[in-house]
Length: 138
Image (cartoon, rainbow, N blue to C red; front, side, top):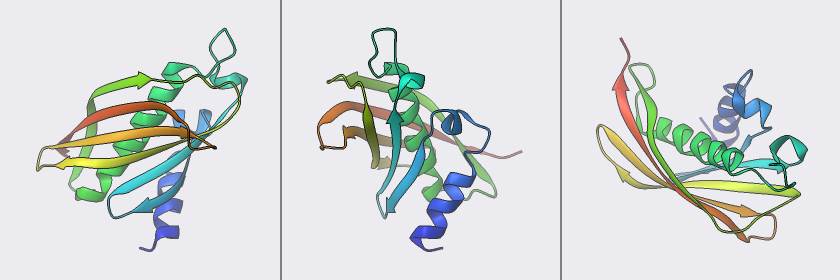
C-alpha cells in the first residue's frame, strides 16, 4: 500500500470510535512514524476553556496504538496499550494539535513509542511514552 492508501485505511477504522468523536485524523506516515491531528474546540476543553489533558492523552494513545500495527501481522495479531505516561507542558485554547509517534523499541511482544504533541506553530504541548503489548488473535 502507498502512503495515501495507508492513511485512508487508518482513518476508516476510526468510524464510530472515540477518534471520530474527537475528530482525530491520521495525516502522515513514514517508515518509523505516524502523525495525526486533532482540532481544539469546546468539545475537548476542560472547564477553564483549555485543552483537556485526557483528550491529549487519547490522541497520544490513538497514534501510538495505531503505529504498532505496522510491525505486526494484523491477520493473526493485535495490540493493546498497557501503559501511557504523559507530561503536559503548555496549555492551548484553540487551533490544532499534531501527535507524532516514533518507535523507540520494536520487540516481539512489546512496542515502546514516544509521542510528541505540538501545535500548528510547532510549539511542544505534551510528550508521552506508550507501551503496547502484541497478542495473538484467538
